[in-house]
Amino acid sequence: MTGKSHVLFAAGSNSAGQLGLGHLDDSHIWQRCTIDNEQSYHSFPAIGSRIVQLSSGAAHSVAILEDEEKGRQVWVCGSGADGQLGPAHWRWYEEKEDDKMPLLTFTRLNIEDVLENSHHSTDSSAWSPKSVECGWDWTLIVLEDIESKQDDLLLVLGINNDFLQLGYPRSKDAKTCSQIIDLRSLCVPKEQSGATRIQIGSIACGLRHTIVACSARSEMDSVQNQHWLLGWGASRHGQVGKVQTTNTSISSRSKVALACLPRVIKGWRSKRDGSVKGRGLAHLAAGKEHSVILIPHLWEINSSIDSCGFDQVEEEHGLFSFGSNRNQQCALNALPSIEKVQWDRTDILGATWNGTFLVLSDKTSINQIELRCCGNNTKGQLGTGNAKPLHETESGPIHRLLIDDADHDRFALQSVQLACGSEHVALLLVSHTSPPQARVIGWGWNEHGNLATNDEDDRHTPIQLWPPESENLVDHPTFRYARPVNVWAGCGTTFIQVEL
Image (cartoon, rainbow, N blue to C red; front, side):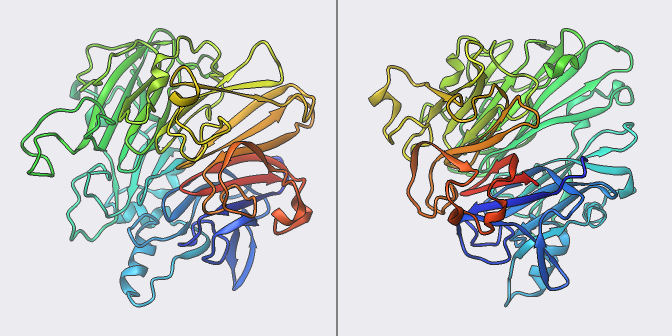
């Protein structure tokens, strides 16, 4: 922590309080997110804290907070009716059937209560939140051992499980809404059970499916890491690996598997130490019915790992999309080279419901970021300047969107953060200057005011979201020129964290 204060602003869909604003109205301008503290609202996060990650589902939001004194905590807001905010808020809904009010402000999630509800016998103080990801109506939380000795824990919160999206066969009358997903039994042979430590690197959730990238290093081999891509949930389109015909699917009317429990989609091993400048990390993204993985050059396919594989042609490394391609959302598989990928960044790959986006650095211009995108464009979410399908306006299924910041800040771009919502996109641009200057741009679907333009008109080309173009686009004009440091997007929602 730097000692600087941070404030979270939000705009967009808020019918369940998922923006944490203290009310249930959609917001068409930037409003400060809040904490309910003794019947008075205060800005979120509190002084001395900052948000390190945030994810938003259909009606809930979950954030990891880093506090100078208390370490990392999980905070939640929105609807907990489906167990997605943990057992305390689910029980609250069950007991107050006539008055099912959601959490209108951000509230701390009691991890000890969640672990107890999942029947996991462990000391909650030994674990720290590592990452979070929201599905439509469920939540995934990764916990890491503070002493770095035990496997990462993957907690799933939720009760709706029609497509096995929770990752385990939960019965409808179960008294719990949280469970720990066993990844070790999937990845590590029994004879090596004590020789590796499973670490979760990345998670992505679609409408009804999840993909997880995890790694392990064997104590017997100090050089090569092992890597797995796991998946579960809705599988009809191959979004969690190769579709297999079966007679035991959820629907008795079809022999095509509609859903599956956790399984290994593919396995790799590192050619050398995967920690080199972060290039040993895989990037994941998930749309409504498709999945995307960016596979590092340092990985090679491990044929000894039993896996279901992909329906499409398999590549050794590079960007690979699988699942539904109805809107050409898997077209980036044809990308000839990923040499311009900024491997040291974690937020360079994203997916809307039916689109895929990849950030590339343009080495010919220090002021330019290149975005390759494909898929549905009915809301202008590809940034083409119109809402027409690409085949009507361009020669191929991939759009090359150039973000040129030269005329704005006149400084070289240091980094970007890509945030893809259900049908809109936001991009944080940060300069090389000291202190860094930054702005957020966005485009696409705007029905709920999630682009904070004080209207509901879609935007077909990038516009500036922060700093707001006018003081009437933010509820507290004094914060208008605060520097943005993070951006996140969800189902008709956008969040920007600023530094004061």
